[in-house]
Length: 193
Image 1 (tube, rainbow, N blue to C red):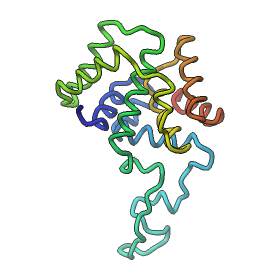
Image 2: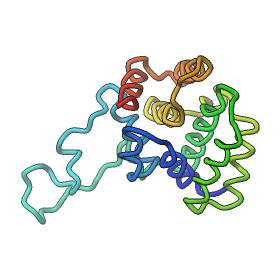
Image 3: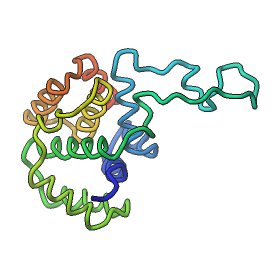
């Protein structure tokens, strides 16, 4: 299969509107990680840890910066396996209402083609669309609340839950992943902006 992170980026960039259009240039995985970070209690980084240079605030330029310690929300730490779960969650959410017309399928394939995702990635997408992952299979193997929030954020980002089936899918996914209701509410609020 093609690079899962590239596919996540392509599908997120293809999403239209509000927060997504404005921030998708960061990359899909980075956007998902950021949404999950803001959704979980205590997820906001402190000003010192948010300093891009990695040096404590007020440190002289050129001062030795402490080694950057990866956090559960560092998008560079997201591996291909987790990106693949994100993709599967995005496809399952898209198919939650059972509707995928030819135009929507064409749009998804166009997004992948624009990102230079080849035939293997296109074929993988078609297989997932034909048989989307179950909620239980998405939740299996998720390790901890940070990863659960990222998987949920990917699914929520993939759709605008305007049907009963989509809302029910997201509710059941959040429950299966043990994503707290307040985190779900914060994600919904961030995506509604």
